[in-house]
Image (cartoon, rainbow, N blue to C red; front, side, top):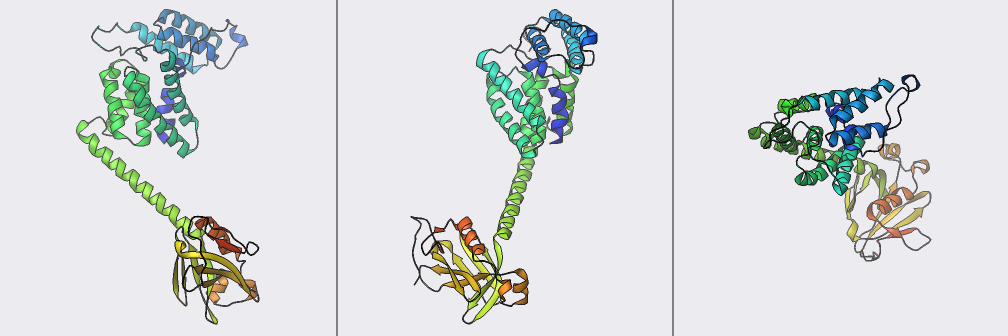
Length: 364
C-alpha cells in the first residue's frame, strides 16, 4: 500500500481543483494579512472556471490569489496547469479532448457520483489502517467501473483506477486504465503525474497485452495463498485459545493431557486415552464435584459419559492431582458456551444443554 502515499498522493494534490463544487470567491485581502492556503471556496471557483473552459478568468483568479497566498502549492500547480491548457492547440474534431483533464462537464447525480469516487480515494489515502485502505480502494474500483461505462471520458477516474490497481495488485485493471490514458493522449499532454503512472505500469509489465493475463493469474494465486495462510493462522490461534490442560477420570485413576473445544467437536488427548466427542451427540455438559475436584461431565445422548477436569499446565506435566492445581469448571463451561452455543439448563445453572431445536437430549 506504499503507492497510496506515492503515486496516489501526488495525483490527489490537484484533485481539489477538479472535484469540488464551486461557490463565490472571497474578497481580495492584502498579502501581509494572509498566509498559508487559500480557502476552499476560492479553489472551487477555479475548478468551475476550468471546467467551463474559461482559462483566462481562471488564470486571473489564480494570479490574484498567489499574491495573498504565495506559499500555497496547490495554486502554484494550478497556475502551471492552466498555462498548459491555454498554450495547447485545440484538438481536431475527430480526436478525443485529451488536453482537458475532465473531458465533459458533469451535472446532477453524475457529479455527485464523481465526487463520491474522489472522496473514497481521499479517505483511503488518509487512512492509516491497511484493511480500511484496501476496503476503500476495492469499493472505489467496483463503483468506478460502473461510472466509467457511462462516462469513459473522465480521465481523472482512469488515473485513480491505475494507481489503485497498483496498490491492489490488479494487473488487468491497471492495463485497462493505462490503455485508456494512452488513447486519450496522456503521453503528449504534459501531465507529469499521469506520465509517471504510465511509466510505473510499463515497468510492472502491465502495458503488455500478451503478459497481463498471466500476471493477473499470478496475482490472484498469490492473493489466494495469502488468504489461505491467514485463515490457517486464525484457525490455529482459535484452537490454541480453546485448548486447555486437563485431567480425565479413568476409573479410579486420572489421565493427564489437553482438551480442545472445536466448533463441531471436542478432542481430549491424554496419557490414558484419546477421546473424540461430537457436539451433535452431546446431550448435556454438567458440573460435578468430588471432594476438592470439580469438573465437567460430557454426556452423550447414548453411551459412556466423560469426566474432564481443567488443570494447570504444571499439574498436567507433573501428572498430579492437587487442590491448588485444579481450575474452576467454568473454564470448560465457558468454552462450551462460546464454541458450541450451549445454553444454561436447570440445576441452578450447573447444566449446559444445546439450544432448542438442536437435539436436546440426556445420556443414560
